[in-house]
Image (tube, rainbow, N blue to C red; front, side, top):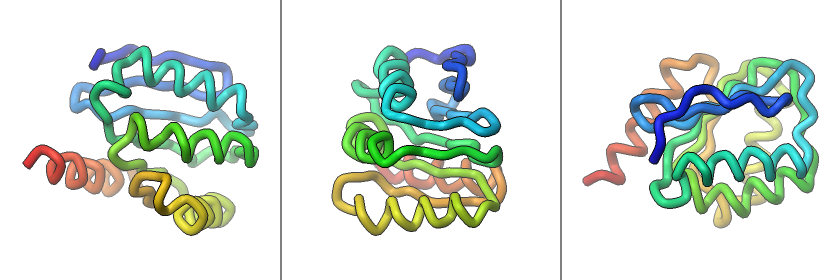
Length: 134
């Protein structure tokens, strides 16, 4: 796994921190389509996340949209690179997205939870990661 400096895709910024947590910050108004999702997963693989699954922290505090094709792709590919995903947001549409994801992709996906603050999200991801190390 490679510790990385931030990589900008135009719709998001991605990096792997010193704890091995993958950060994804979505740009304001980003339309996450299949092409963007594929671009992100290519970066995740280049960072070594397929060989060593990582916890993912998504900063979704900006308004964004994700297409159904991108959701399907993320659900299928996510299990190959993530042990858990946390999203930071207070938005009702984002809460609905998380609930949708958990309802329709429960067996395909990884644990996915929404938090209003970064500290709680990181604490939860550490708990999931640390359980896997034992």
